[in-house]
Amino acid sequence: MKVYVEEFGSRGQFNALSHSGWVIIAAFLGVLACGSCLGAIAAGRDSWLLAVDGTAIDAVVLDKHVAESDPERHRPASYYLQLAYAPPGTDRVEVEDGVSPSRYDAVDPGDHMTIRYVPSNPDVFEIEPGGQTGSERFGWWLGIGSVIGALGAAVGAWLRWRNTVPETVA
Image (tube, rainbow, N blue to C red; front, side, top):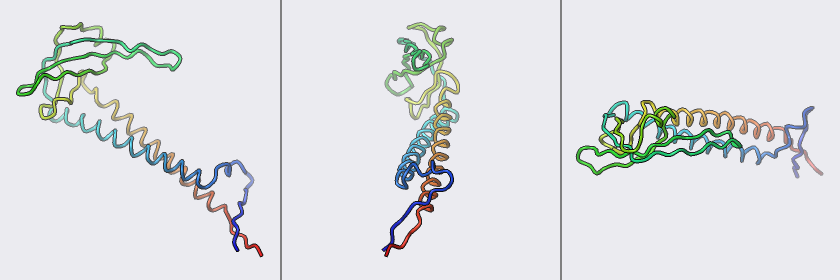
């Protein structure tokens, strides 16, 4: 009969998690990496569509509002504009998106402004040039960090498994 016994090295701290604990961490980080990369791809698709097929259109500012800052969570205030535009041959489209404080202060409800949208998919738009790329970059960095974490957890699980040595019991 074989019984598996753990060998502890000079640094016993590594063995705080079981083999399955490392596998669960690696799996979780792997799923997070996949989701982040898929989100970045979707955001990148919108950026690509705007770069290739983006068309300027006149939009009217319907409303604007500020999501107040939260000092306890170190979140600054966020500024939003609600706009409406009418692409040729389609119904009026109403959208809302975050903008910079200077853009927010520069317009009032009823003002007209030029935005870019994709004629084949009117829901894809940007108020400020390059506005789609921030979420794309964040998704890629989160995905890369998750892949590195998942690889580290997988190596941890392998090292944990390797340190489990079979011992024969009579």
